[in-house]
Image (cartoon, rainbow, N blue to C red; front, side):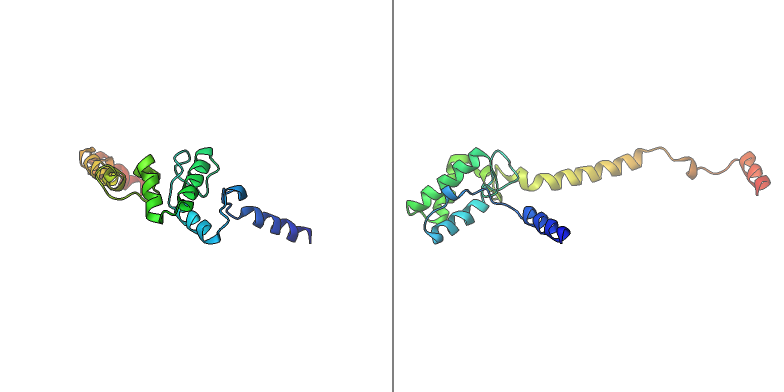
Length: 148
């Protein structure tokens, strides 16, 4: 029974926790749902790999409050995102659009992979032939025949 209780406690602790505090939440459930949806698409500029909805960073809290403030002002989801992007740039989006300033983010990994492949091919071509590729000399062949 004790093991079952420990397992249940472990599973409860393993669930993902959102960083949104109760004092940040909007009273209207529909507005709060919109805020959570928008927050999941915005990057915490401190943590960089988390949405502001998941981050405990003070700046993420400020961004969550900013999103909720814009929603209470009657802005649409697109207007709220545009407002945040205007203040922080495309970097704040977890999925930035493909534009001139974000092109490196989208193409960079593929370019590194291709350049790495080309580098490996060039290295393979310039590598000297290994000893396994050279034929045996008469002395080596005689020694091999003697051993077998």
